[in-house]
Length: 181
Image 1 (tube, rainbow, N blue to C red):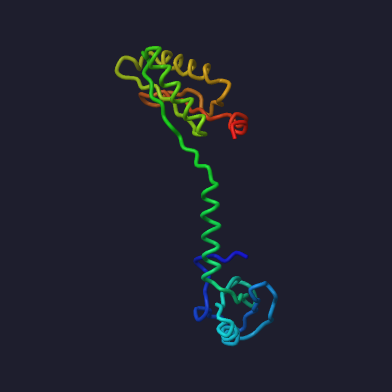
Image 2 (spheres, rainbow, N blue to C red):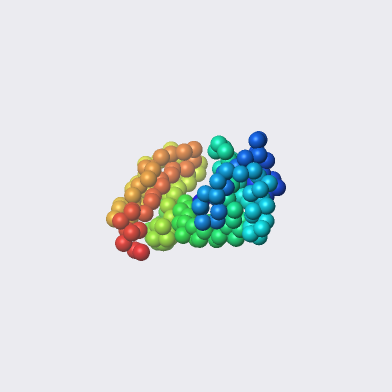
């Protein structure tokens, strides 16, 4: 039972050429084809709403239901679905071509933490001035990162020079993500 939020017309908003609609009750039982005003009166007598659920059908289909309750339950289902959704974001670790070993280890530890959280990691080597004439230094550092993380990551995008930065994107391996949960 899906009703589009924007299209759903209820009660007096329902306008049909010819005035005939197919009516179903809250349980989905067909009550037959009748005039809009008769169906609306039937819904009012039951203290419910007449909701248009298939405006394109011949004749259009309307259901007698408690629309407020239906909308509330729909919002609850959508909220629950959003809760279960895992948002993967891209975290960035910035390095320099002449980075010291300790600084490298700290940045690597941060990258590992991001990957364990299930995020992708963008490793960026920033070049300044004359450093740009030695891109092999950046490639070497990105190679070291990939080598140390090779068991737990897959390289989504290999090292590539873009302007003054060299970028590599890493993603957690599916097997390591599944084994953790």
